[in-house]
Amino acid sequence: MFRVAAASRRDREEPGWLRGAPRPRWVRWPPPVLLAAICVIQLATPASLDLSFLLAAVPPLAALSYGASATALLGGTVVLLLALPDFGLGRPGNSDLLTVSFVALLSVVFAWLRSRRDTQLVTVRTVAEAAQFAVLPPLPERVGPVRCAGLYRAAQGGTLVGGDLFDVRKGPCGVQALVGDVQGHGLAAVGTVAALLGAFREAVLDQPDLEGVAARLDRRLVVDSEEAEHAELFATAVLLEFRSDAPELRIVSCGHPPPLLLRGSAVEELAVAPGAPLGLGIAGVAPPEEVTVGLKPGDRLLVVTDGVTEARDASGTFYPLAERLSALCADLPDDPAALTSAVWRDLMRFSGGVGDDVALLAFSLDLGPDERLGLRADPEL
Image (cartoon, rainbow, N blue to C red; front, side):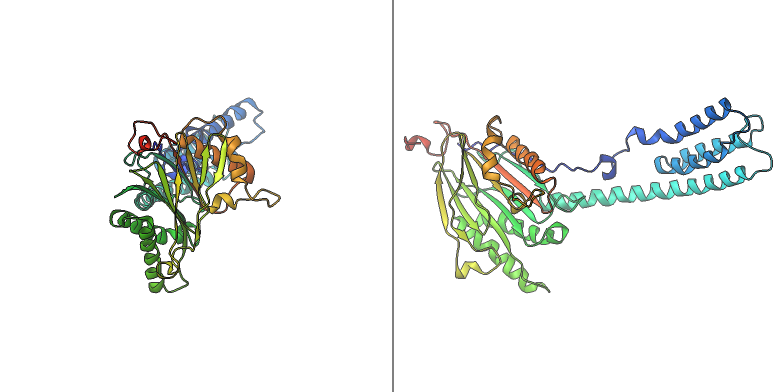
């Protein structure tokens, strides 16, 4: 039986408070700390030293961290301290009190406007994330006997979906998976990603083999290209089928980087027939060829998009995934999530950052003798 361990992770590098979460507590400390520091210094220094002008910074700083009510409270405290004749911050005849009062009033207005804007941004962000998760939802932990781990990073900051895609679904003859990379990246490619994923999920239910699924995806892009106002649409993709009646994997490649098979400490780039990308009308011209690969207990599989293989270091060298994979997997547990995380960390160390969408989908194969994939019928495996 295939054990394919899976969890889709879309960790975002930006701070949580930029995504609408509560601001960290340290953001609230500067305004009161500055106010207290000015008061202490003023009381501890000669009367000839005038620090009242520094108080004008407290209300604007509060407006960046607090709402209108708290900003008004801090601004009112500043004005009150300037108005007290015995405190030593105000000076007879100067304009500090009126100036700070005006700045405090403006800060309250600014804090109110910022709070409204933050509320609107949180709403927009929530709706956008819901829409993006609808396009590319997290992978389920198990699809039939298959578990898998997916890792996705969009090139465009602040987004969850870009030009890469993956999905795992249960079909009539086993579990089918798709990893693809559409033309372009970022939000501009999301429409094509949504169309391909929808076509894949329908084709898995209707088509008896991977060639039929690929033909359905190709037709989807051809039709969308005819309706689009600009250039043709195309995508590279690799389709996988884990058979339910035999310990084997079937692969159809449409111009996509081949999967990597990890067997013990060895890493093998599977020899797949390099078909043409989807969207070029391949169904009636050059349909892709299906390749079958036998599987053994402990096998692991990794499929990536070209955001991984085309990443470069400072000298312009491409990321050598296959060469580095053996060392990366030496001490890893038999866990696909650990594999995708290790590859991502190593990719970041190598390149310092990526300029294209990145997707990784890993499978951990654990074929037991009493499982459902026909292993007992083939003693050589």
